[in-house]
Structure formats: C-alpha cells, structure tokens
Length: 68
Image 1 (cartoon, rainbow, N blue to C red):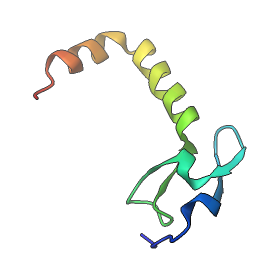
Image 2 (cartoon, rainbow, N blue to C red; image 1 turned 135 degrees about the vertical axis):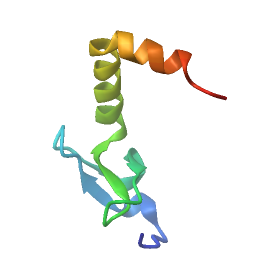
Image 3 (cartoon, rainbow, N blue to C red; image 1 turned 60 degrees about the horizontal axis):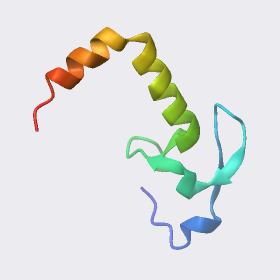
Image 4 (tube, rainbow, N blue to C red; image 1 turned 180 degrees about the vertical axis):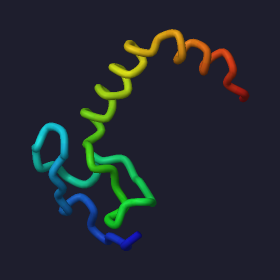
C-alpha cells in the first residue's frame, strides 16, 4: 500500500454513486492496489444495511454466534 503524506488531497471516484470524493471517504482495503475500497463509506453503509435487511435471519444468526 502506498504511503500517502497528504491523504486529504487525494481524490477517488466511487464505483456506486460515481461521485469523486476525498480518499478519507473510503474504507481501507489492503487487497486493492491503491489500498482503499472502490465504494465510498456512504454507499458501503447503504449496501451493508440493505444486505442486513434482505438477510435478516442470517444476520440475526451471525450476531447470536459472534464471539467477543
């Protein structure tokens, strides 16, 4: 992952909403070349909430089996 000295100036386009945003609006992803997810935090959150709603039974089971 590249070392970014001034990450607030680096911009990236979200693959979902197509808006160019500062890199700080993207979660880190060490498997990506640039080190960040392809979707912004807002779109990623919407996607996760949508998945949780569509898979409520599976999500409930995952929460119950979670080990702290």
